[in-house]
Image 1: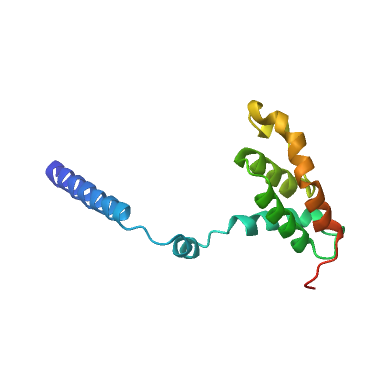
Image 2: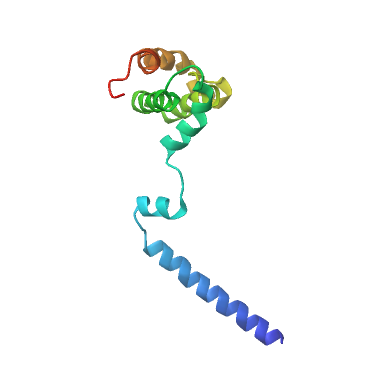
Length: 132
């Protein structure tokens, strides 16, 4: 009985190690992986979290949130600041960065980041969309 259990354990580990090696060698395209597991894209997830904060304020909350995401992603080069900004927008509906979300070495860049995104944010919120 003990020999059967050990044999089964060894066989299972050999099969799993072979499968792990096969996974390392085979790398499917990212779009296929995402579609197989129905993982939302980062922009879509952002819009899903942001839009409820915009309902009642704007006629097209998804469009405003998508615009804010696109400008933040394109304008803010630093990954930590961009992530904090997107988090703030998705949680509150307005550009917000909590100092706790940013490493201490980058906290002095919060003000300049807001300056950088001020005009695009106002454009997203107040300029009429051209493709309605």
